[in-house]
Image (cartoon, rainbow, N blue to C red; front, side):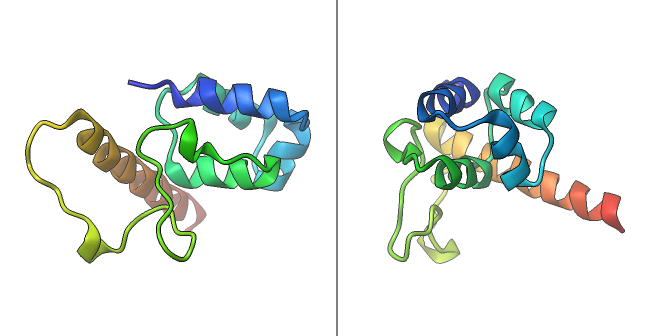
Length: 112
């Protein structure tokens, strides 16, 4: 499995963007950015947001990220298909989606 945080860290450092400025533009702390660098699993939304800020396209660096018509990183629900087989890439994709939804849910709970 790819360590997405390491790929992101390398791209950020090569871009010359400051960690502080990246954190500010993301609305997060510097500590959060370093936690992303240490994390093997990073939600696609964060990856794409970081890529936009540092002007880096991660679609060639990280498996499973594909751009669909309209610039979206995820297919419409009816275009998604889960075969039910043990395909590691497919399992990882759905795991990332699940983790991303859990994080959004927890953020909503902490705000309310």
